[in-house]
Image (tube, rainbow, N blue to C red; front, side, top):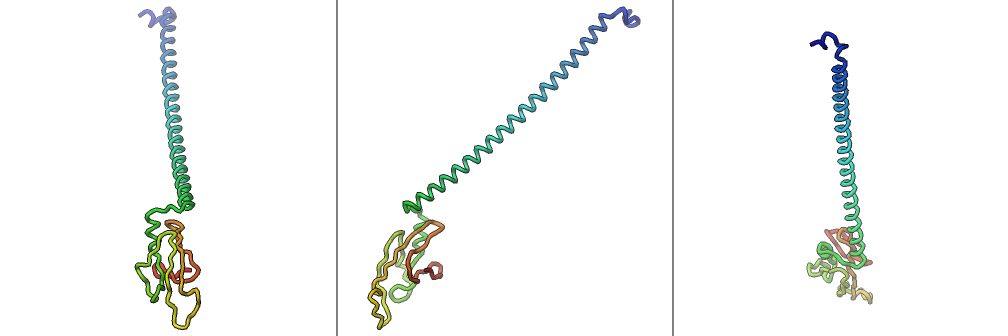
Amino acid sequence: MRCLYHITECSSVVVILVVVVVVVVVVVVVVVVVVVVVVVVVVVVVAAAAAAAAAVVVVVVVVILMVVAVCELLLRKFRIYSTCDRQRVTEWQPANHGTGKDHAEDRYKDGETISHTRKEPPGDEMPDSENDVRTVRLVGCLNFNVSFKEQGYIRDGASNN
């Protein structure tokens, strides 16, 4: 009680109180700084992980596209085609074969050379008119054509050269 009235006589108590207050303030400041540092480190680590994941996704997509491009080049180089290619090429048929009508049996496969006799009107004596040879060439599933010089082959009703 004496210290309450005569503070100067209790200087040791004042010193203890000041030290306690300073220690508490320092501890609070240190805790706040540690929490802020931990939050910043977590944010940086999460951002780095997200960037790494995005980089991995980009690399995977680029590798897949490169593999697809190489496979396409190999398919074209070695003329290895998928089922859809072969189905597409069978859609080609001669528009005028024999009697001038389309024949469903005249279906061609990739690289097959077709020879058939074409009937000419009477009086047409061209020596090469009896042998009509055409070669079907498949370029790719979405890009294909038939190689020949004269008209007469159709697909979906369109005449092609």
